[in-house]
Length: 270
Image 1: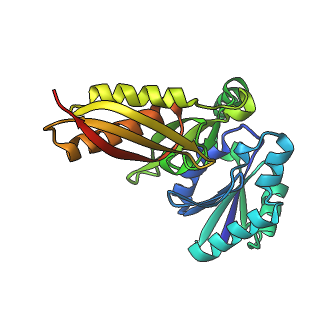
Image 2: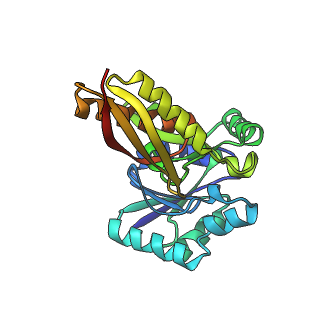
């Protein structure tokens, strides 16, 4: 296994540029801020970007928690990548992460200044300081499981690599609302109101009888009890309602919707 490092100060664009660098060097895996990312999947770990304090974030990024460290070590053993890129704020941090995870010492450490311009680094620093945004080098559908309730935005880019076919990479912009704006919660009434709007827009649904939602660190589970119009295609209407609630609650609240259960309880006769 060959280990590479990408070193640079916090907020200078390491996570933003990690995917393109991996594409150029054919590196399939990334260690970034406590996460082990292999291909397009977050295989293991906890993101330092979820921590509420700088000290907590540093501890997570360095894998100082034994359970966290063991989980990521085991995932690396299972995945068996031939190359890994480790991101760190300094060469020393990259080397410490490799040692903590039981990986070989980095054979090459690349500095962010080697792959970006001063203007690009200044832009990244400004976005971090003014908007409080962070980048995770993984697709949004993977990130949402860890960042349910955070504001997220997918970014997809195409880069030409030395006249070869364009390289497509997807990364996710995250703003940790717990850290910047206080704790972010969604009331039951908000979910109920969204469900009611979707019911009014879904043919065949007569009434919403009951709505409940359960929240966890991974996301939200919603249960709906509905009354349908007599003579409608019940299965079609129920599936349409289920899909609409899932998509709109996820879009309007930024929560990861784990599931929507629809119970049919009677019919309404005109």
